[in-house]
Length: 245
Image (cartoon, rainbow, N blue to C red; front, side, top):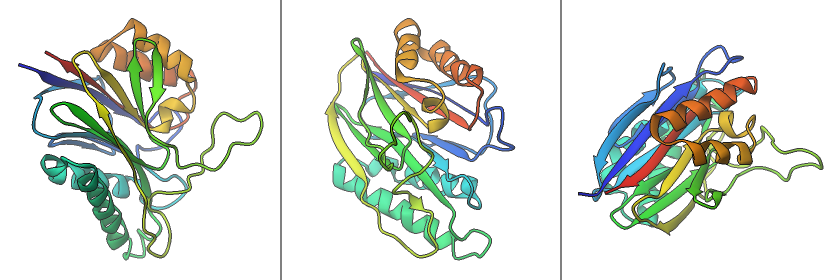
């Protein structure tokens, strides 16, 4: 029987006072908390399985509330996400939910990124809004399959904390244009879904080296460790998706 493993962790990092990241894997959500060790879940391949991370926008109120709203909405809708259009509609509903909650003055302008994948029987629906990422861990190296919603980088810069699109994040409602694409799926495929607390401090070639050496819980631990050793400047949340048989 073919199956999917999802190995995940979420950690505040070394400098942030609390964790504003959230994560969803099927019906399971992890919101604004910390996992001491990577957790591995196993799912049958077939029914749509959503795996995603959400990163509350720093410097604005209640990022942890926005990210939790997004992943809980995706968890509820997950089994129905069998087409690109269904994923776009679901992300629009997430955006609506964040803005609706933001009518509370204490939550106004809260926002979050989101990135992830829906695992289907023979393909994968990759999606994102913002700068959290989905990376295909191929034998030839990591390949980014999400699209960063970020302004152009100035010369000499590798990263930026600015985003050009998010769920919520502005005083008045703003519609989103999610990035959604379908990719083929086969046994042995691995994907990394993560917030920029991993990809900002750790260069992609270093992430690739770790994924070439390790898998499952060890890989998740080594990825987290690499971000911590780089200073752990932000919340770190990641999920490794692996297709087995």
